[in-house]
Amino acid sequence: MDAQVSGTVVFDEIAGCLFLAHGNIRTPVVWPAGASWRADPPAVELQGRLIEPGMSVEGGGGYLKYERLKESAGIAVADAAQACAGPTGEVAFFNIGGNVKVITD
Image (tube, rainbow, N blue to C red; front, side, top):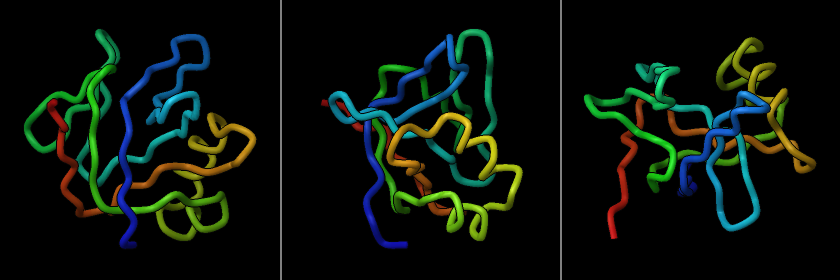
């Protein structure tokens, strides 16, 4: 997948979901292989660094709907992401072996 996936990391405590946000649009996110979740305080551990809410990130991938996500990442990942998906049903998906960069202004 050749699209650019980017946004600001947002954690919704009520929903228990991690999103990439672009303005008012929030999309659940599937991180590359090797990523792990740290619950307190919320962060994703990836490629030797912590990615925390409020940070902006970018990397290769795409925005997938449920069926394509299921094909790419498996049913368990697709079901978990779909539980957080909004009206578009899209999920931000970083390529499995891809590099996610933290953007600093």
